Image 1 (cartoon, rainbow, N blue to C red):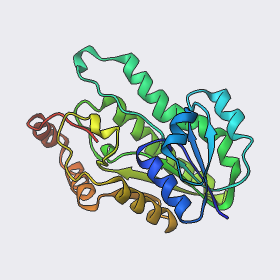
Image 2 (image 1 turned 90 degrees about the vertical axis):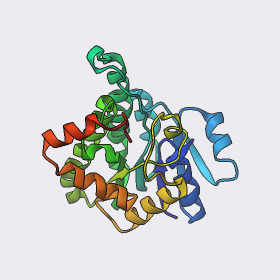
Image 3 (image 1 turned 135 degrees about the vertical axis):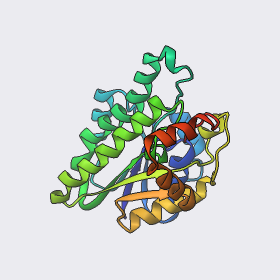
Length: 242
């Protein structure tokens, strides 16, 4: 039986992935900090709970180093906070987001990479926000851009170990996290659609998995605009991020 480890399995995309992989016959290791939350979210799902705080390097190493070999690792857990007043830049907020999304991912990578089987795959959860700068996204975008570079560098260095690397870049997905947003979210999709796109892309060994298609294509096109033109357009649009 194939084994998949998923961080952030207590809600949103991570929870849906855990449910779907379990339904497909995988052995699921569902990771999170809160046992009661995981148990409640995964009620009725055949999954092994893996409890640790990804921001605690020693704790993550202790728990994850004890695991058997894995076929697939999906480092999905993360958070989002916005810089509402750039003139009075919130360095503490910036540090929190970087620590959760980027350093937390590194804390998981350290003990997990050696446990991925040859022929296995690592997936990092980034965002479509990294296609171009968006207002209020200084912290979130920087953390996800860091994951982009991390994934692409790891893909080079892990190839000789026969470990594939996938970078996942979703648009707006209807999750508890995005429901906190106070702005329009064009192209928003259901979490089940996101799970299908991710699982299909990983099964095909895709290096980058972006969805929904038309939303991502629109961001790509916008990213090709001259910087000055994009700045003028951005000033006329509502403040938002993905």
